[in-house]
Image 1 (cartoon, rainbow, N blue to C red):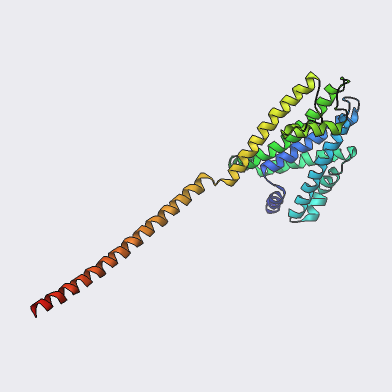
Image 2 (cartoon, helix red, strand yellow):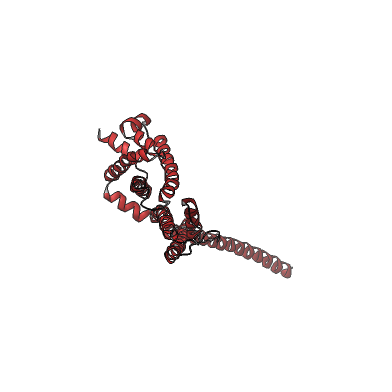
Length: 270
């Protein structure tokens, strides 16, 4: 029974960074239910949440397929380990979001089974991967929050060109990406403050991504030291082989010089 439990955990657990990413994404989608319950809470917020939820649903479908195909017993995962709830929670409908609570509970259980020591070890060993997943969830949250705030601030100005949720998300995306096409822009003080914070976040995010890529492209110090030691060892072997060849050549030349001296001395005696 214990072996089956450990084997189930092994196939279910996908790493600390990934599990926390799905956990936070599930929590965000559940929190977004407030915009469906109170559609007049923020103008155009429901449209923004629907667009973001469509993107989240695609991630959840990929997550469901990943867990299904990597699980040893697919029927066990689907029927006994809430796989059916993962599938239903991937549907981009407000009523289906309630099943994302099951996803949150399952991930918490899986992480508890993995153990605190394993989680700490993975965070320490795979810092770049964990940071990447946190950056992804941060980008999603900041784009949604900035879109909701900017459309709220801009709705009070008659000169505003940000009216719909789609326009707000497009503006948030190009701003956080530090592209800034200029087709949409805030005209109110509140909207511009949101834009400034979004640009600062974008610079920080892409700086962290650059660090992640460099950590992947440049070998760790342990690997570099091992390579250097192997090169040093290879260099010493080459030097030793060259010295041996020089010694052999020296011996051969000495023997030939000795033979020549003998011939010269014998010729002089004659």
